[in-house]
Amino acid sequence: MAKYDRLLFILNLLRSRRNLNAEMLARECGVTERTIYRDIVALSEANIPIYYENGYKYATGNFLPPLNFNIDEYITLKTALESSPLYKAGHSRALIKSIKSKIEACLSPAVKETKKFTTGTISVDIRSTDSPNYSEKFYSAIEHGIRHSQILEMRYDSIQSGIIERDVEPYFLIFIERAFYFVGYCRLRKALRTFRIDRIIDIKITDRKFIPRGGIDPAKYFENSWGVFSGEPIEVEAIFSGKAARIISMSRHHPKETTTPLKDGKVKYQVTVSGTEEICRWLLGFGGDVIVVKPLHLSAEVRKRAGSILRNYPNR
Image (cartoon, rainbow, N blue to C red; front, top):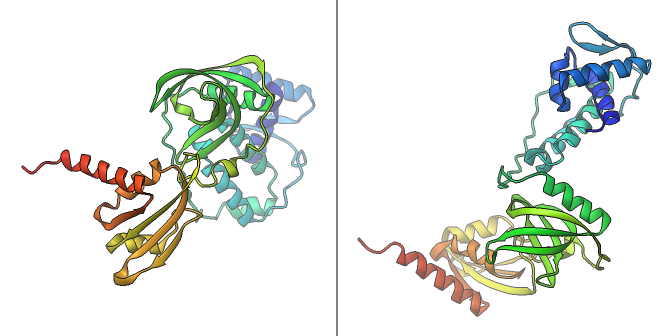
């Protein structure tokens, strides 16, 4: 965190919380206590009236104007920030903490008083399956490459191909299917590819620039995807029965699906997806309560994988 940003962050902390000592401020800012003492001196030299009384405080309530949030708006915004995958995964955590501090500092006195007696009623748990061992420097390198149209040199551990070195034109970062990915044009494969962040082994920003290709948009790129795979759209039709039919009827699983009730409580399910790998795994989870009608190659793949499962559990 740059010094100017840290000084503003400290001011917001002092305005929103009480009895913060140097140790607490150092922990919040990710610096040493000695740095905090220097920052306090710098703020005092700038004629900002900070004093110490059971913790650091400053002597005016007029440094920042109050925000015109009511209590419901404040709770909703706080929940959204704390539920962000960026916050939970660590990436941009410092930025989100800074935003929260600024919001707290600018609340009106009435909202500050009300929130003392308000119990949170909303809890959103957006789970991430990212490995805890990946380096956050990858994020900054990818973001830099996107902003400045610079090619990235990357060593990537692909499930299908293993470890391969690639030159990639980065286009956007996205959190989808419980993990962070970035989409880029792979010069090795000569096509757009989706890369999972925690499968990156190493990444480097090069001095080589690229001219961004037109028409690359996250919404369009994942338009027909079941999860993170993309490709040519394929029409899938399946017949669900038993408990699976009730599950399909009671909830949505894809934006472009249609369900049609049939006789005997069965349900016809139709959807257009990009590739069949992910929907194949999903269909297998319903066991004998689903029959794939089309495409034929998806039906054959489900049969093949079901046979492999049965071979792993011979009669004993």
